[in-house]
Amino acid sequence: MKSKTITINGREVEFGSERNLLEVIRKANIEIPTFCYHSELSTYGACRMCVVDIAGRGIVTSCTTKPEAGLSVKTHTQEVRNIRKIALELLLANHDRSCTSCVKSVSCKLQDLANNLGVDQVRFKKTEATLPMDESSDALVRDPNKCILCGDCVRACYEIQDIGAIDFAHRGSKVTVMPAFGKDLAHVECVDCGQCARVCPTGAITPKYEIAKVWKEIDNPNKTVVAQIAPAVRVAIGELFGMKPGTLLIGQIVSALNMLGFDKVFDTSFAADLTVIEEANEFLKRKTENNNLPNLPHAVQAG
Ligand code: SF4
Ligand code: SF4
Image 1 (cartoon, helix red, strand yellow):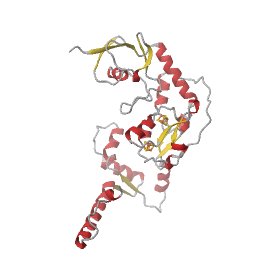
Image 2: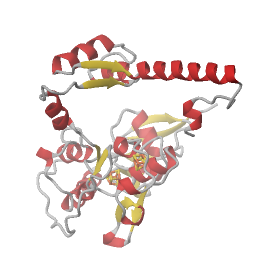
Image 3: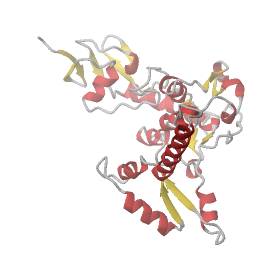
């Protein structure tokens, strides 16, 4: 069967089940910037970063364009680069640009793209008022002044977590992403899963860092400070240091925590073992007394 191809920057590229032109372009190892595109989420087509020039059609967003045999696409013409640059400047105009003190600095997609596209000044004036930060959640900090309205958090919360704790509110220039009825994150159905922070390209939703608090307790000679390691961390941390996925680093983690000053280090599974022992004892007691059966595990009872 004859394969289907698209011409991208003068080169023939085969395509198959890719769901949009953007995926075909990326398959050809051509980097196209995006804020609002995640292959695991539905397509939103809002950030305009992925625009390309299709012969006979003009400028289109590649994430919302179906791949079709015979298309001739240019990804980095001067017009395309200008559109991306202006779109980025407009996003930056109302963005809180205190990058040096932002926890997302260096890993911020907005900062990264501004550098790549050569945005060294923002010609547009800030028009929005500064909004209060939401630090109500135990796990997350939400700073609406850094939001670029890409909607990634909204779709992650709804499509991955099936919750919908945050959404778009208001219209036109007033449009904002926020928890329902403008409440704080701690007062809606949020479960602190962190999926929104994972996909947010800027510092608008970030994990809550409590490093200073931990140091304060470590420095307190009258306090026994205990660290607990969740099972996934034993291997996940290795990937952050560029090791092969799955590398087991429990020994190194315990040593590092001891060197930092933690008095004791426990694995979460230690507490799970204690729970199982307690449940077994409870079951034996109930079975012996033939009372209050069946004995459901605590996780099931908690629903
Ligand atoms: S932490 Fe999870 S539940 Fe809460 S807003 Fe983010 S994605 Fe939704
Ligand atoms: S909070 Fe982050 S992910 Fe959500 S819309 Fe704003 S920039 Fe996008």
